[in-house]
Amino acid sequence: MTSNQRQLVRQSFDAVRDQAGPFSLLFYGKLFELDPSARRMFHVDLALQGRKIVDTLATVTESLDRFESIRPRLASLGRQHAGYGVRPEQYDTITAALLWAIGQALGADFDAPTREAWKLALNAVSTAMIEGAQQP
Image: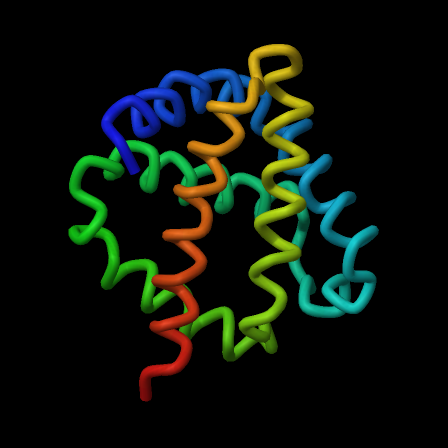
């Protein structure tokens, strides 16, 4: 990611954080629409789970300039999610649902450069999590 792309993600995340509750409900609604089988993996309150995903996005956003520093945490998260039954191919669906929900939160501010920046950031997260899931 370029420094400009990292800045776009950081700047736009404030709007996502400000709408954390609705954002997470939109995300999970879209995720379950795209992959109905994912619903069975969630045995907890979605509001609580939503706070966790927004917290994780906050950590990622704050660490974009030093992404390698959070790679071990993401790898651990990937192993944890593999234990829940998340398969590597589902990360594309998760990314699509997140991009859609971010777009809903940002509205007109979710222009092509901002969308591409988020896509790159989320793909980096997915890659780190999948790599972690594949480690013993």
